[in-house]
Length: 312
Length: 312
Image (cartoon, rainbow over all chains, first blue to last red):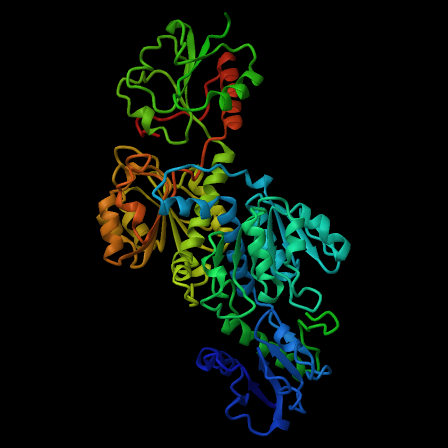
């Protein structure tokens, strides 16, 4: 057939929520699953999330791999990944909108002392707690890519004072930007609420550690909506217990689901959510897949490609 | 003296947080307190919040009364209020900003299922809960004045579908507006999250009752940041217990502080905050007072006047 087959390799995802969106757009496409992959040399496209190491290298006719998430660390971590095959990352406005909601909600939650007010409610205590004006609250976005910039725009509309840190220099209206290793310390020194939206790479693994927390102003809050691998959990607990940090909202963890015995579940200064900040929207994702396949059919390069040297 | 005295009649407010802002702007002004009011016929201006009934009528030379809050119900409720004296209400961008934060935080909280996620955290249960896209969540602002319109603008930026209800017709870009008694039912029928920001008047007292809740779609959430007098507490509890309503965030109560024995404190579907959604900013309020006194000195009418016929 003219078009090769597509392998949907994302075990554990309910197929029926995903493939119909693609079939509708490309009824001609032969969509296969891991249970029935057929001949490997017929597979031109693969949708992956946490592929078994070596499984992509075993597909000799691959033209593009699609990552189901904005974070591609689980795919890039496979040392056998065939580097000549472009890896396309979903850039989905609904995902970015959903992440923005989560970040705005969490920033307001710590800024407006909701955590303390809810503790007071459990004690049936009526006590007002002053919060500073948003324009005096400095929110630092650690990882100032597509998701970070979208969140910054929404937070600016609420008058927060924004800064962003990224590996490479970035510009954004009204946002103080920092970059690179030498920019990290001054960035952290002025972040009352730190929002981690970094890609997980060897360079960012474990970045949320004791040293980083010590660089934040006293009473700072931390929101991690990126990857569990960014956070050294014991260091966070120590920084909270010492009183240096005021609170943390965590959506991602080294081990997911978070084990019942993990102390973060019951820490009085921690909000735990089950990796639910932002999910890839099946319809939007499959529209991206169909659009990219059409480009490749026309001999054009796919979009939103991962740079393997950077790891994202 | 050329200017009459000003009486700061708001017992219980820490004077030192308020009067210096006015003294700085008007060093010539004779500012008096209830402890030392001096001669009543020298008092031209009065700052009030919950005046003792009759206390304003006892000031024969009053030119303007200033309400310390956006809600003037406690002043208007005094039947002896001298109606020929203009009552000026604070319209303060910091108050409106603060209310917007509270409303956005509470809408996100119910939309993004934070209440359920926090219950799951207490059980150490990892379970994702889907939430609709913001563009499919209909937020209805009951009371579409200055505060309601500011909140609507911020919610629109997050893609929520907005509607507003007010006593008199109002227009706002991208907001479906309803008004008057006949507009209430169709407005309620389409409000997944209802935000009450009404002024408290005889016509709106007890408006949040069983009948109103029944008109909301099943699973609706209610946020009351207006006045406790709007809410029939028992009706709310019944609507929550029946499962018709999913949750409520309440900042205001019939009796404040909320008594320890009030069942709202411990209701599993209710978030209680201690009348802290939005506080008048002393500096901004006193700037408004100084500006208004200067206008009156020049023979101009004061601004932001309360219409006693409407009650707000």
